[in-house]
Image 1 (tube, rainbow, N blue to C red):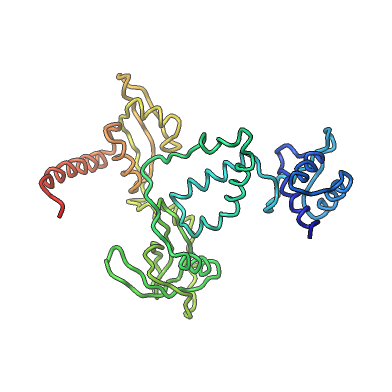
Image 2 (cartoon, one colour):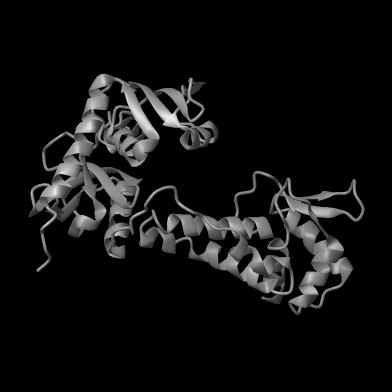
Length: 339
């Protein structure tokens, strides 16, 4: 048993290419810090033995020789370094605002390992890493809706094994509770909500069902009805996930202020974007081909007075009407008081 634990400890010290490998003496030193008493000669034999079962290579062109995993290694071992640890923690922090809790819980082992690495170097420069690197979302991120872990795991099982589900669902649109057989074809996480894509009962059309609105579900005794023509990627590309208004793209022409022009110069609105100078030093002309969907309108409205749409005329009038409607509604509800 001691040998097995030592082998695992050795593997966890070896980095993956192209990172610089670790020398035998460094491995020996770190093993001793963990309480292992092993000679350099025995450690060399251990490494040779492990190399027979794992993609471990020794770079004998440098002194001292260094050991590392092959760059395509996909296993759970391999050394954690500062960059990997911080990346793991930041990814988890980012996903907190997007992914359902049951899915995030499956990442706990990697997260705990990353945190342990940072904490184990409390006497080094790594101790302040987490105070020096933060993720700031661009725009308001809603708190993810609660999803029952049992429902999450049952849905995943059904999708992976092609099983139908007996569900009780609270319809947001119809404002009522429905019971039906769901044939799930995929999962889609969009912003702060997770959706099951599938067909219900004997209907063939694919719809989105918010996972947090399932009151209960279980694997069904009914046969699963596959949809060979359905592709999750094609569904997304077609704009269904973003409430697409038309198949035609919008050829946007708009005036944008200097601040927005700088931002779009670094993070483009689309690959076709072009920003041109105008007679004014404070305003620029933006041209871009973008999807005709709800996200496009939300983005344009969210920029406020930083963007003035010129074309298409229909979009310009639509946005101006929306702004006028907000102003009118705000005025009409001025006297409304809470109960």
